[in-house]
Length: 183
Image (tube, rainbow, N blue to C red; front, side):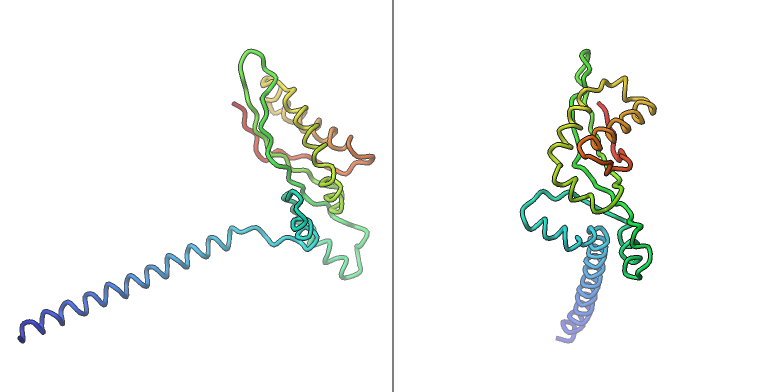
């Protein structure tokens, strides 16, 4: 009987120790996952964008890193005339290039820097026209014309001209390619 009690005492602390270690490791892993998920979540949408999204419109990933600075200046009463533009992100484009010898594709992400952040609503209203004109432009290009740095810069200028041509005044300051893949 004494031998059985000794065996149980030896097993008991071992099992308890394993359970405690398991709980600690599980909590650490769960905390790490929560930390990374929280850190990678997008910033909360501004009230105007949240109202647009709830109205069932397409969500145009609009961001403006300079916007909080402009709002802070307006709150102070100084610099209200100096409004910073924001960045308007278009959905990715995947098009067939105009090459006749081979079937080639272009995948491109374009971000537009606006003259003023308030122009984002105008771009949202004209999003179908913007996407249409850019799809036609991109699919008219041949691989040889866009594979060089000079070709990409020329394409960027054409994108800027086409988008601004949709509006009466220039609302877009610059176009940026954040992803450019040809195959």
